[in-house]
Image (cartoon, rainbow, N blue to C red; front, side, top):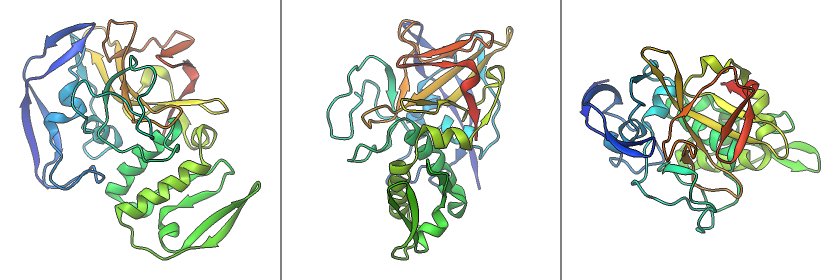
Length: 289
């Protein structure tokens, strides 16, 4: 596989001002294949990715991630054009429109399913599907582990009251369309409680791309860490975050409403709370796949 390098001259909103970053070489994903399989073939372009849109805060660099890792995959997620509004699953506008800095170029579906934990499941599932589809699996709130390989092979399930029962289904090929229907069934019966149980607690000071701020419960919430930057002198870390919410809505990069429109959030490991525009987490609520 051929890895390519690109000098990107980007403009990004930092602290409420539009600033130019210096040209920098960034190591890109394999240019010969599509790692974002919901996109039509040939439509992905790295210049419309998260890494190209959002320059790091002054004096910072992005933390190192392994090529092929979840964090590397997240760093180059495709975005819709700057200024795109966030829409709900039914096409209506999200209220408010003031909490997002960008919108991911990924569908939300037409049903009220892809909410907060589901958005994390969607992105993690898409990453795993792009690598090894038969390794994709998620737990339902009941605790049942539903493997995609079993599901497309004809081993479905049905829910009766509080019971999850085996149910045969049509045997299918592991295409992306079949995978997308599998995810909708997972979204229906999984949530913050089940996802939190699947993840491992990690220290806020060691936050990495792909980590998840999550509170399991009803209500609960989940926010995904898309990228991490670190100040070269002080070691101060900053994160880019993404969420969906209720009702189901397009996954969006969060705006730091306390930094005059910037998208990077400073990590303060000694603080008891970590605030995002629509939820405040406890510092011990950071977890990792």
